Image (cartoon, rainbow, N blue to C red):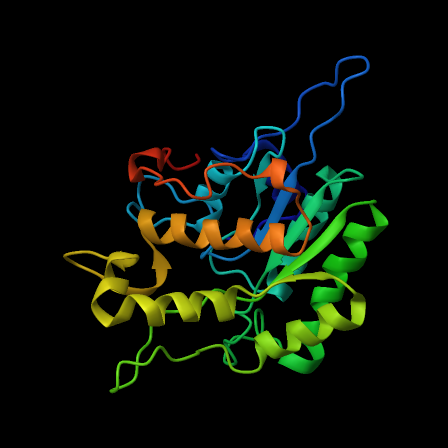
Length: 265
């Protein structure tokens, strides 16, 4: 189904999912919370009851952030840096974002689909070009852009070594972050190291492996919680957030905290 830009904007602003908290009207003298917006793909996106136990890491992010650091998760299944823009979704984010907010951008999984012209970008040209639109758009609104290399898929070679799957995209994002002086969360490197540490069998308990599906791209609740923890640690390391912004980083997070609301009408 093709949606108009107005429909996309309305849906994005009206259907903020669980865990994506919008700041209410400010009281006189009260400081407005800084919202962390996520622009990304299915690995980060909110999932609904028809997709459970599939879980985006953005669903778990609020567990590790202070209540004054709300999350607005605009990540959507199947989107690339290009299609997210072309569908008007970046416009919707920029319509809601405010000075002092953060825009965390993670794309590449679908940018890699070279047979799909609606999503494909080339790492060192169009991919970087689209990412600049997010960086420039956030800065124009007085918000801070943050780039995150794509979290890794679960793939191992015959020797049991975790194998990178994103080609030149992480390197292209790292280079752009350096050129633009944008904070970089290197989720690709960190998640690859985590999968290596866990090994071939234990990683299955972090991905959406069920009796009927063997999904090596999307997470289940433990995987989403683990990646969200990496994200917040990186936000602290890069000083995008301060120590008081993070909570529970050393705590065991119950998987029962993850919930899947009914699908949107």
